[in-house]
Amino acid sequence: MAEAGKVSEPLLEIRNLSKNFGAVQALQDMSMTIAPGEVVALAGDNGAGKTTLIKAISGVYKPSGGDILLRGEKVEFASPQEAREKGIETIYQDLALADNLSIGANIFLGREPMRRAFGFLPVIDRARMAEAAKTTMALLDFHVNRMEAPVSNFSGGQRQAVAIGRAVYWNAQILIMDEPTAALGVPEQRKVISLIHQLKAQGRGVIFISHNLQDIFAVSDRIVVLRRGVRAGERRISETTHDEVVKLMVGG
Amino acid sequence: MTHAPETHVAPQADHADVQLTLLQRIANLRAWLFLAALIIGFEVWARADFGGSFILNPFNLQSIAIFAVVPLLLATGQTFVIISGGIDLSLGFIMGLAAVVAAHVINWAGGVMSLPMAVLTGMLVAVGVAAIPGLVNGLLVSRLRIPPFIGTLGMFGVARGVAFLLANGTTVPVRNSFLSTIGNGKILNIPYIVIIAAVFVLIMHYLLSQTRFGQHNYAIGANEQAARRAGIDVKNHLMKLYILSAICAGLAGFLYAARFSAGAAQAGEPLLLDSVAAVVIGGASLFGGSGTILGTLAGAFVIAVIQYGLVFMNVKPFWQFISVGVVIIISVLIDQAQRNYGGGRQSE
Image 1 (cartoon, helix red, strand yellow):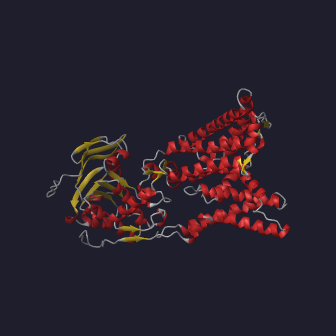
Image 2 (spheres, chains in turn brown, cyan):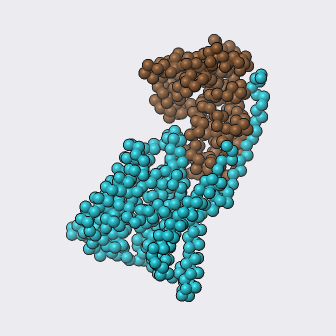
Image 3 (tube, chains in turn cyan, brown):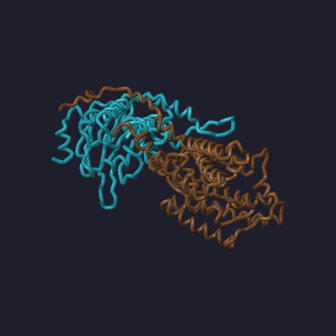
């Protein structure tokens, strides 16, 4: 199924990726590409291999076979940290933030900027964290004035925005979002969808996993459907329907 | 249903102007409010009872400060551990162990070096020995994934036994005039041990509020998974954390030995729960993720003022337990109210 029309070099290309756990073949011969500014949805029933695929891309699992190419260059990740350094960031639905810390502290968690107080005493540079957080969140159309408030004070969608803001600040080129709307109310889901549109506009690639076809159709350019560890099909969103996607998912 | 991707999503700007609620502000300051209320209460009581002042009496201030020093040091270490979501039950007997070790070493070293050098050696060895059970706690909690409550409870027993063995079941008196000068001397009416404790608490405040170690401690207490995903070496952090709290207990043991010119294995026994109480009154949550050294400072003084004030007012000492207990319960109620109504998320 050759993709016509895309001229730009793919940001990420996956070739014949396989992963087995002992005798269990969780993922087999999976191939897909993501271009800059493209949102690709991954769909499939539970156990179809979506999670295995994103864990292989983000460095959690080592693939049993196949290649991952980042801007045409073959890469291998020994850990999620290595994937992150190369610009691949995973946004987890729930577990991403320290609720008691401010937006800035969450963005810089583990990489806090330091300054010298009185010329000698190393202290965390909170002003710099707040400033960077403010500009980054403004990129996502999220304007906060009181930067010191803990993120527990924000709503679910706003917290997703903070997690995305962290990825954006650290210059993630590919964002993997695992069910980013699952735990949210409807207005909050809209917020996340509009955030994804902004990432797209900034030329980043997004891999978007969801059970919600409505969300997938609202935000994706293409959809890749997995079934029992293999690729069941791929469609441009503009050329497919809910029914066709569901058929691909269940194998009808 | 058709599917033009851009339809039902109007890009909407999000303005989040979050204010700390009044309840949150009160909760954050509750230890200082308690302290102020207590001091005013005792002042009124003292004036009504015998026409004297409670708080303007320099002797009272000094006594309260001396009274607070040793529990405060334990509570400082406990603050770090509780913020991380753990608890350190072994601190009381690590302190006793350190006090006994300090006493023995200072006595021994007094024979082979100058008295001040002997005291310094005793302090360093006591703190060093205290760090060992801290290291074991750290190993248990971080590598073997034993819940802190259980791991440090085990170490509570071990440190207790070793301390009593080293003390041979009795109190170890120290013969060193320099040590008793440190323990009981003062400059400008400020006792030396209060100055030592103040400097140490200031350093710990800096460590918790201004460094990566402190910041990561809060993050781990709130969401260990998120901390790990952010690239923080959680195991390594927990190792350092339990060693740090044990070092606080070690210094507390040394100051105890200085104050009483003796080491006793049971020195810290009643102080363990006081340390937890000071942290909780100080605004920390036992669920982890919140608390400050300044809050704990106020919490330790709340307990010291209650205990000293009731003695000063000639009340039967048993009322101390009741009063401290009531303050702890009120404090936890405020924490829960804040959790339920104050800092909750706006949706869901």
